[in-house]
Length: 326
Image (tube, rainbow, N blue to C red):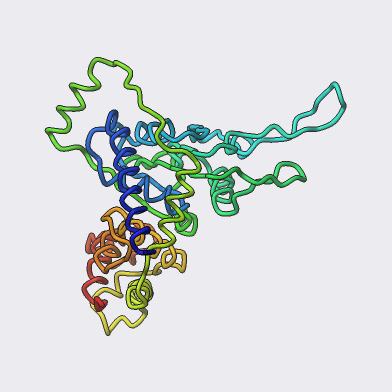
């Protein structure tokens, strides 16, 4: 009886997710991996980093997600002259009462788009990433909790390095996923031209509430993970930390492996992928489907990997070949 009820909830959740994708698809042509990644970060309660050249609908996708979700949304354009106070707020003097009062910054919203996060200096990046991790900020002497849900989507341009401040690896680790956004296919590009070429505004409907998001997260938590799958996840993470450079053919390409955050996030995302597939249990293919987005920014490559022009995805491929599938 309990299993039947769970299967019914999963069927309802699939319908809800399809409706969300349909509304986003009114504006965003193609990019299914990016859209599913955004939803995965939202369901997992983490934050997402989008990397791609300009003009690939990254900002449009985030803004559309915020519009179909009945919550508050703020976009912050990161620039070299941005200050932490511009992000979290500051204390201002109120002349009428003769006291200082807090003026809260744009971080006090539900969905934050941190556009071109690598354009701002380290102190601004740190202010944002601290808020992401602690879910609170301090203004003056008072600490304020950020409202739930709190979801940060950051974008960065991989082709321009002048005037940028690359995110340190330790700060990248705070993002649950790093999504790479590629160019659309030619037929998708033609659809974009026909749909967006007339500059007509496309409206979307609000199809997700905070209550529905809580229900979806509760459902994700109920998805079963066998102990052998848990061991498989841990084996992948520990393989990335392998220091025995003679026992395997990939260890010389890794300077530092994935953190324990990677273990937890891989576990959560595998469960969400199982939900996407309409299952109430996780299989090894769910882990493999999300491992690249979860680990590509958590594995620091060695100079040998750079010399051989290997990417993090190439190294993850080799790890998956070594780790035994249950």
